Length: 92
Image (cartoon, rainbow, N blue to C red):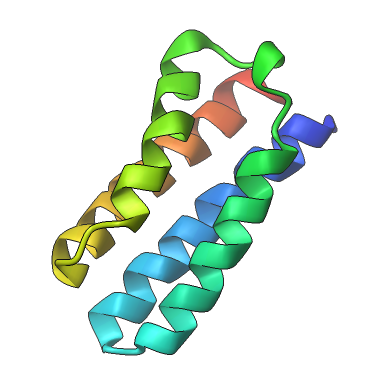
């Protein structure tokens, strides 16, 4: 199991937790997982991932800056699925 697989899978889970926390109205928890997601994002060896995933990784900062938390939660859930699918398909 590669380090990228672990980092990408962990990022997917953090994004899912962000979505669930905002949906449940737990903003402090969501903010904590945003911090964790940023750490995971930095752990990914970006030279080893497909270009489309790199585009998604780079767009996470914009997602996390959204003021509308409901849309942020929806985006986080979408990105979570993208990263999870990538990890399952390419990184084992």
